[in-house]
Length: 123
Image 1 (cartoon, helix red, strand yellow):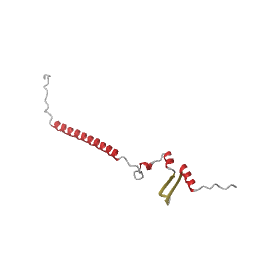
Image 2 (cartoon, rainbow, N blue to C red):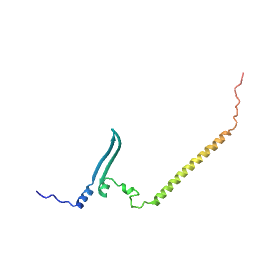
Image 3 (cartoon, rainbow, N blue to C red):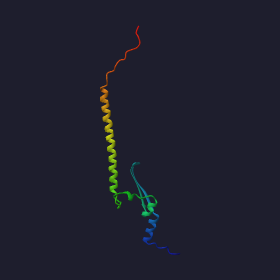
Image 4 (tube, rainbow, N blue to C red):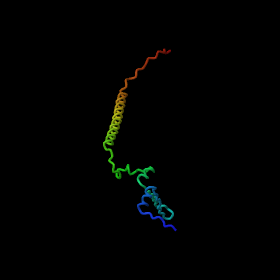
């Protein structure tokens, strides 16, 4: 019999990180056939490169995990532009409301109705 090839921890870890490994499990707590709690556990162990290949990159966008500085000046400029747009829209709405109220006041002061004379002769 040939001896089994010995794999040291570094080789094993390199293989796992290169290929990735998924561990899945569910914990379910029932009492008298009534489900009280279900916990679904999914664990993926892979290298960063392998995770990116699979489309997983949430750590890059999480501010508490990302070491990259966010472009605060760009975000600040966008927020100021949005505030300006909202204030302009609010001002336009207020102007329309004021004009409508002014038109309504004028409608209350409508000129008196004049009666036209009938051109028909009465017998």
